Image 1 (spheres, rainbow, N blue to C red):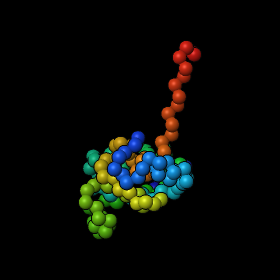
Image 2: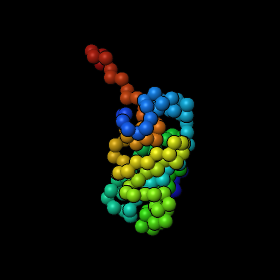
Image 3: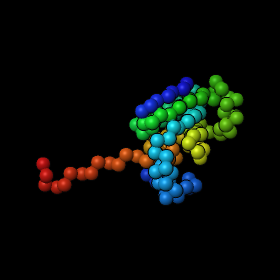
Image 4: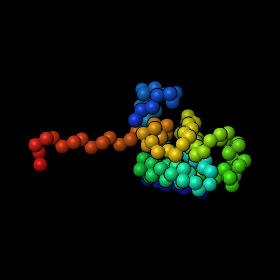
Amino acid sequence: MSHKSTGSSEIGLGISAKAFQRAVADNPRAHFVLKLYVSGMTPRSRRAINNLQKLCKEYLLDGYDLEIIDIYQQPGLAKGAQIVAVPTLIKTLPLPLRRVIGDLSDPGRILLVLGVAPAPAPAPAPAGLA
């Protein structure tokens, strides 16, 4: 399945906060190429697909290609990509290549891995103003 659309900090991902901010600033409108490896339509696979599609629609405004690969239907692709657990998301572009394993339920972590800055939360209204 392919889909094309227009339109938190984590330690241990191999990138410093400054490098992350610089990468986002240098490439705010990148085109993303994502592959999500799943195992059939298990609840965990469905959750990963739904979570990723929601994030893509909300944050990847300038476009993305999302390929969902069922390892039961295409085991050769999983072997070639060295998939050891599912669901696994692989971001191939923009570089660097990144992998995330799990149901993608932590949006902050996924956005960090993708190199996308979440939209800032609206500032609260000053007290006493109605």
